[in-house]
Image (cartoon, rainbow, N blue to C red):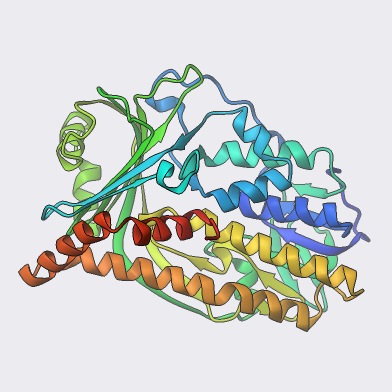
Amino acid sequence: MTNKSRETDRFDVLVVGGGMVGSALALGLARQGWKTGLVEGATLSDLTAPVGVADNVDDFEPRVSAISLASQRLLEQLGAWRHVQASRHCGYRRMTVWDADGTGRIRFDAAELHADSLGTIVENRSVVRALFSELADSDVALIDGVRVQGWHPAAGVQLDDGRTLRATLVVGADGALSRLRQWAGLATREWDYDQHAIVCTVRTAQPHQYTAWQRFSQTGPLAFLPLLNESGDEHFCSIVWSQDTGEARRLMELQPEAFRLELESAIERQLGRVEAVSARFSFPLRQRHAKDYVAEGLVLIGDAAHTIHPLAGQGANLGYGDVSALLDELARAKARKLAPADPLVLARYQRRRKGENLTMMAAMEGFRQLFARDELPVRWLRNTGMRWLDRLAPLKNRVAAEAMGIKR
C-alpha cells in the first residue's frame, strides 16, 4: 500500500471511505488487479494505532459489530480474519431473546445448526486494523488524512489539499451522511425512529456464557453482547440500549450509579449484578435507503446506501454483503473486459443488493413496530408466536441460518 498520490494519478476504482466496509472493498479490488485508490479522512497512524490490554470496562471501544459467518468468510478470503482472531473478539454460541411484557422467549443455539458459533462480536477498530494490516502489503494507493471536497463524473474527485483524483468508477463508502450520494443527486427514503441508541461496556457478576442477550420492551430493545479480553475474562459485555428519545435522554442524564441500577433492572439480572459501567455514548437512530445505489461513474455501498435499526446487529453484515456482490460483479467485468463503471455491471450490482437490503430493513421495522405495541391482543399474539417458534426447531434454525448467511 502506498500512501502518496500524484495529482495526475488515475484509478480504475477510487474508494472514498476507509472504514470497515470501504477498506474491505479496496483490498478485494486490488487483489482482482484493478488499479485502486482509497481516500480516508483519518491518518494511517490513527487507523493502525496499537490498542492496550483491556483490564476494565473503559478499555474496550464502545462501538462493536456482530460479524456473521458470511461476513467472516469474506474477511477470510481477504486475509484479514486471521488478524481479527489475533485481537480481542468473542464468538457467541447462543442467543436468547425475550419480551419484557410477557413470557415469550426464543433461544438460538449454534449446536443446532452444526456450527461453532452464531457470529463474532468484534470491536469496530479491530476490524479496521485487521484490514489495514492486509492493505499494507497490497497495491492499494492510500490517500489518508484528507477529505473530499467535491465530485463530478467529468471533473473527478477534489480533495481539500488541492489535488484532483480521477477514476473510472468512484465508490461512495463515506457513511450515512454520504456527501458523494448528495453530490450525485441520489435521493433517499428516510425517517426518524425517534429513538437513540445508548452504547457502553459493562462488567457483570456472572459470566456471559458466550450468549447474546436481547430484551424487547415497549420503548425499545436492550442487547448485552458478549466480549472477551486478552485473558479470556467472560464477564464483559457491550451494551446497545435503543430507547425512545425522551427515555434515552433521561437515562443519559442519570448519575453513573443510578444508570447502573436501571440497566441491571432492565436486563432482569440475567447475568447477576452489573458491577461496572463505562462511559456512555448516545446517537440518534434514523433509517435511510437510497432509491438508487448507482449513478454515472458512481456506486454506493454500506451506510452510504442504507442504514438500519441496530436491533438485530445487521448493519455491518449488510455492508459486507454489498462488498461481496460488487466484487463478484467487477470480477465478472474484468473477465469480460468491461469497464468497472459499465452501466450493465452497476445495474447487476444494484439488482442483487437492493432487494435483499430492503427485505432486511422491512423485517427490522416490522419487529420494532411489533414490540412497540402495548395492546393486550398484540402482546398475546407476539408472546404466543415466540413460544411457538422456539418449539419449532426447523423454522427457528432456518431464521438463524439466514441471519448468519448460511445457505441451507
